[in-house]
Image 1 (tube, one colour):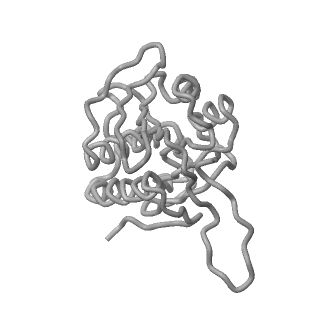
Image 2 (cartoon, rainbow, N blue to C red):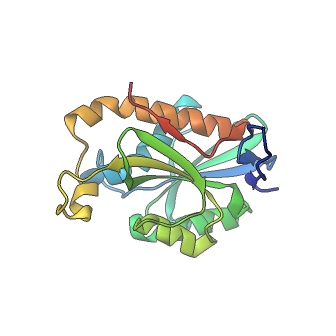
Length: 213
């Protein structure tokens, strides 16, 4: 059974658009670029969020798996075996690591959640969805090209650019502003809470959440 299952809305009811299945293995991937030069940049917020989730749930230390092109750790959460992955391929080839891990551990592609930055969403918002356009995100293009688009996405707003003509690559590879850095603990805490809901089998609302307090 897939991690996310689409339901048909019913008139006069309020139900989640997606619910979690009961598979025993789940894969959560944070997107980013490996190396100190990229730490704290907007493009690496996926790494930061799953680092927070790993700490919150007492995952063991990260292990490099060169054959799977990633850093990986795993733990039992409820009745689910949960694998956390940070690709070491750099952003543009992230799908290679996702496909390698999913195939090796026999994880359904529908039971994969990818946490990543999104320039088209304003800072202060987190949006959840299944599938959809990469919106120019090369990491998502790579993942979708490797496993299809039927995987869950937690999209973390990092926009807008400082000015309209600013190069997008320069913007995403820069560090967050001082004010935004002060909000990062709230951001990572909210994403960790969302991921906890996934792993414990709760319902996933196709929704937008705010992490600014």
